[in-house]
Image 1 (tube, helix red, strand yellow):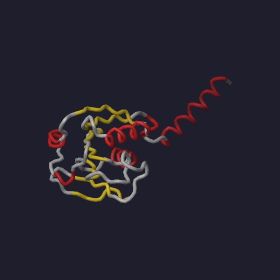
Image 2 (cartoon, rainbow, N blue to C red):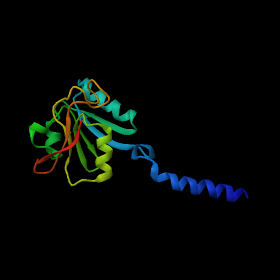
Image 3 (cartoon, helix red, strand yellow):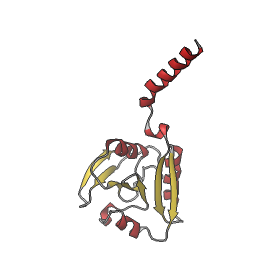
Length: 149
C-alpha cells in the first residue's frame, strides 16, 4: 500500500512537470557584457535574476567588440549591454518573457534587441514593459517586430 501511494505521487509529478515554465524548471544561464558604471544595465541583470535566470556579468570599458563578435553589426540595433542566452544574442532591455519565448520557439534569428534605452523597459523605469518594441534580427541584420508593448 505504501508503494501504491508513492506511485500515485510520482505519476502526479510526471503529469504536472510539463506545466512548469523554463524559469521554474531550471535556472536559464545568461552571460552579460556591460560597462561597470551603467546602473540600468545592473538593474536589468537584477531583474533577470529575480525571474530565475542565472546571470554571469562581464564588465568591459567598451562592449562594441562583443556586439560585433556575436553578430550584432548594425549600430541602429545597439543598446547599452549585450547578452548571450543559449545560441541567441539579447541586446538591451529585453523583457524576460521575450527571452523565454525565444528559447521555447527557437526562431531562426541571431537574437532580440530593444534598441537604445527605452524609458519604460525592465532595468529602466518600469518592470512591466511599456511603449516600445522588441525587435528580432538575423545575420543579415534584417529585422522584424518580435513583441510590441
